[in-house]
Length: 166
Length: 166
DNA sequence: GTAGTGTTACTCGGATAAATATTGTCCGAGTGACATCGG
DNA sequence: CCGATGTCACTCGGACAATATTTATCCGAGTAACACTAC
Image (cartoon, rainbow over all chains, first blue to last red; front, side, top):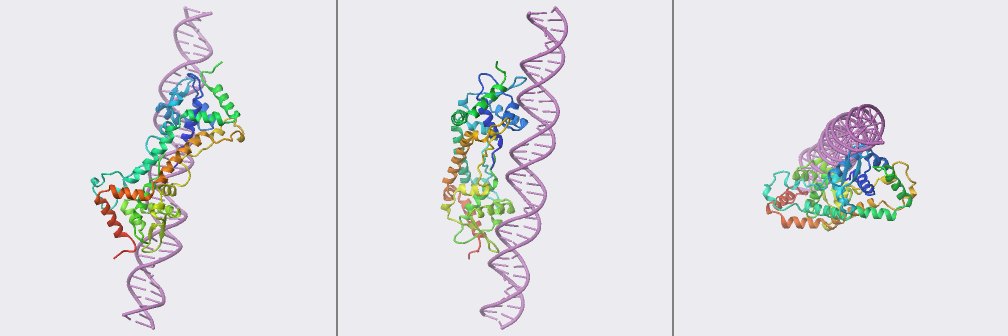
């Protein structure tokens, strides 16, 4: 079980975009440079987030991405599901119904107990992700980060955001 | 994010092996036939479970696998970790420290807030898995399954277990 | 000086390859059972 | 008839391919800004 790295970059980028004021946008290329990741690959993830209604994309020069909702309305679960897809990690293949001399399907009216337990755990996982909103991430970041880190982020956003202010 | 199918087969097989009495064993080939999965591939998963101390393997004719511990001492988490590996699904690459004109490493004394949140969710996931023991699965299966299913399982175990009784 | 217009450069989006993880297969080492042979 | 022994078939375990998924890349469509021209 390995989570796509796109989740990490997606959340980070969403957090950065939360720092924009008003209608300002930030191009994908800028975010890619800021985090040292592949620009074109990042584009794919940002596209997923846009499809999911988490981000808005503005085409053309001075275009880019910005948040489509308030930071309070974005949870980590939203981002993870947008990038990884909505399907649960555990997928029951109903192997209990397979194999030698199988029974008819009507012999299995109750759901597979293993499936139930696995999905229950995954539900707990998603609940925890759902309880964490982007605001919480930003607050924790602001409270525990070194001033240099905050300054670098602020400088970056001010340098690359569109439209340029000033 | 997709969980290996080996997890599903691993749990099912462990549950079947729990039905053995005394020192009896069941060969991997029998389990593979029962569930209609690749025998050699199943062998790999059973090997992982043996390494983890969940199963015991007996070589030679009339050999096979059996539980290495009591059903109360085996949780779903044990099985999942044995097959998927102990590492968490979310792996922080510290991309916050990468990119253009990076800051020195000592600018990041606090752990990444995103990493903390993701691992916290995963901790909840593992806790839920850990609370579910193999006993619970067996109880639920015994209580909610059609008589035909239980009979098929019993017949299968009695037919293929080693040493053959009778 | 101002409005209209054409070009241009920059953006995102989808189709196309490489790398990696998962899935599946094959062959070899080891072991207990069985048949055989001798007493 | 009973015991020792050699062969054998069956087991698990690790090394070797095929497939699926993730990762990365390239190219095209679209758009707003800019410069230029005409008025």
